[in-house]
Every structure is written in structure tokens, then in C-alpha cells.
Length: 193
Length: 193
DNA sequence: CGGTTAAACGGATAGCCCATCCGCTTCAAT
DNA sequence: ATTGAAGCGGATGGGCTATCCGTTTAACCG
Image (cartoon, rainbow over all chains, first blue to last red; front, side):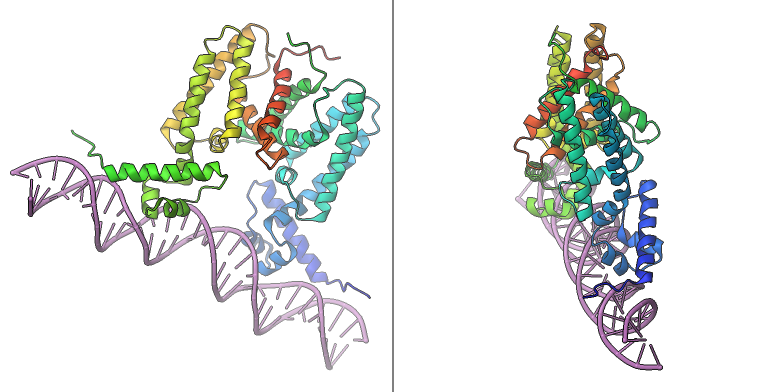
């Protein structure tokens, strides 16, 4: 059962498509698959065969970014300062969204196209869950917060920064400012005075 | 210079269109103007004459909501408890976004189609600015926060709640929980321990 | 009440984008 | 060199936006 005869041109085309998509994402252009095909010098059919939908292509573009986050998260798991570990991880998450436009929509999407994406998101959730649990056990984080809240909140922060300023210039700074504020709120609640 | 001969059928059609749009917004369907025309029993041209773009129609639908917020904001201005005034206002803002799907996109849009929308948003900004200023003067709010941050942050919270749960069932509860957390962070910062 | 006029109407239509389908090409294994 | 399947490409259908213009109709007037 020798399954796969790998074709070289197929791989080449796939890479071209992803490269073009990367470029478009970086310059803020929305992915239009016919457009991607033209720029990559391939037929529309080729694009659609490799990526059944724009979402799938976007997920592919975002994969690297997700992998980086997972990697950082795993490093954070080795930090003994539970609050620093959690907050550092969350900061990274927001920074990544600001730096790479492909991340936010993929992170916010309720359902994935690629299995790999689901896998990576699952890893991130698990890491976040562990970090949150440790911090909570250490008593440095308010208890009424679940691991499933982390991704939505980080997406919300990134979105808020985007709403604040159309220009991505100071978006990173804004996002950081907002996140700082939220993180203060995440800590064990102050007396209600 | 008797300018305007008002036509009754025009007004009637306009109302029908807005009513249909309201319904669609309420059931979460995106506004497609051809579709709106069909449902309202008018020609496409009629819809486009009254509302040059879907955004314009959405803004019209959102107007009531914005007016309600302004009204509440003006009441909040009479509250002598500066923190309660600000926080109550912000809570309303988020609740409104959860309750009415037309509000978020209009609030988040960097530019408006209708003058009325601009006017209302301006009012809201001014109210928020005043409330924030008072609270800051009273020392109950962290200083590194501008009035122009309020709308983005509230949009971010509403967005986060939406990301959390596709179902609008518990969206209000989630949004409130997130907002509470953020509000804790908005207060004069706790010692960095 | 009938005439006049401009406002309003409506739908055919052009343009754009998504997505599919299928005949042709090209690779790779033999 | 042969062959068959994997891959290619673009013509094409379908849906949505937005416009344009010939027709209808409400409002005003004599």
C-alpha cells in the first residue's frame, strides 16, 4: 500500500501560494483566492485544490505563528514565578496578534478547517489552563476566570487596539497598555472600596 | 424657497426597509440590500436611494440604540458618585452591544456614513470623557487611560464575549464578567506585589 | 377635478468575487 | 518509451453590490 507519489511541481506551487498569501496578509490585504492565484502564477483551480477555502489558506499562513506561541508557552511552563509565567504568555499572545494579521481571525474562529490548527489551539488552551491553574493555586489570580476565557480576552484586547487606531504604528503600544490594565484586573481582586 | 415636498410613499417605504433591517439584525442575519428589498416588497433601487450602502442602513438601525446610550450617559452625569457613574455607563455600553448587533460594528467603524451617527458618537465620547475626568480627579481611576480608550475597550469586551460563545444565550453574562475584570483593572493600580 | 411636474419607483444589468468542473498536461514509476 | 494517475488551468455558473434609466405616482395648482 505505497500511498503517496509526491509530485514536485505540486509542492512548488503550494509554496508559491503560501508565500503570496503571507505577503498579502503582511500588507493587510484580505485574501482573495483568485487574486492569490494570479499573483502566484497558477490557475485558480490549483489554489482551490490545495486550499478548499480562504480560511484554510489563512490557517496555513497562521500555523507558524501558532507554533511559535506554543513553543513560548512551553518555555513559560518552566518558569517558577507563576504570575510572571502567565502574564508573559498572555503578553506574547497579544503581541503576536498585533504583529501577524493572520492570527486573530484564526484564533477567534469557533471552528477550524485544518486538523493541525485544531491541534495547535488545543495545545495553547492546555498550556493556558496549566499556567492559570498554577497562578490561581498561588493565589495571585482572581478565581472567577476559566482557561477558556483567555483566548477570547486576548482576542478582545487585540481587537480593541485595532479599533483604537486604524494605523498599525502604535497598535502594539496600545495593545500593551490595554493588556496591562486587564492584567491588573485579573489579579486577586482588591477590596471593593 | 419652499424646499421639500414630502412624499408619503417614500416615507412608508423607508420605514418598511428599516423595519425589515431591524428584524434581520435581530436574528443575526447580515444585511444584504437586495434581500432587504425583496423582503420589504420594494425595488432594489428604492433601498439604494434611501441608503446608499449597507453601512448606512445599519447606522440607521443603530441610531435608536445610540440615542438611548446618550440618554443614559446624561443621567450618569448627574450621579455624584464618580466611579459608579463611570462604571454604570460602561456597563450599559457593553450590555447594549450584546443586546443589539447593529451597535458594535457602528461603534467600531473608524468613519461614519451618516452625520447623525457622527454626532451621536461625538456626544458619547464627550460624556465618557467627562465621566472619566471626574473619576480620575477623584482618584478612583488609573491615570494612564484616555477617553478615546473607552469605546475601543468596550468593543473589545463585547467582541471577547462573542468569541467566547457563539450562542448569544450567556453572552450577556460573559460580557459582564469580562467587564467586571477590566473595571477592577481600571481602578487606581494596586501595589505591584 | 384634471393637468403638470418632479420625486420616487423598480428591475434589468454591469462588475466583482467565490467556487466548481472537466478536458488537457506533466510527472514518475516501470 | 509507455502509461496512468496526479495535477493543472481557466471557462463558467451563481450570488451580491451598486447603478442607471424608462415608467409610475404623489403633490400641487389652476
